[in-house]
Image (cartoon, rainbow, N blue to C red; front, side):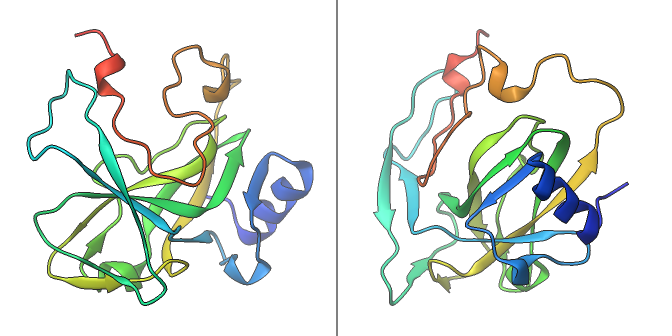
Length: 178
């Protein structure tokens, strides 16, 4: 079951869903549109290592746009800061984004109850595409949870991505024990 527009509005009023900045025009019948923030990142090294802290370098998207190229993996960020305290948020690309050949996440489309932050996007493209900060990039949908949550994401000691703001965050896989 996915929350409808009315249910999303009710949850915003209750404070269990938070979106900043919020614009009523971005609320669809069962989703909320999010936009591309002004910063991208790429990994500094050509070869990345899952056991290593791989550093990234930031790229500010100029007003005239920025061209993304195939075979380069970009990290982006949503303009919107979100909090979800009672539902499971899913971030999906908009159909218009997909029709430009832009994928906004490799695997991490699901958030956890208690996620608070701007969403890091895992962007790849099929052919060169010019993008712009503030462009619609995706949509959040919310699923109710069956059962009581024991520990929300933002309360976990090992929550590697809690509270991220305004800039893409690199992989924290290296913090895992394997």
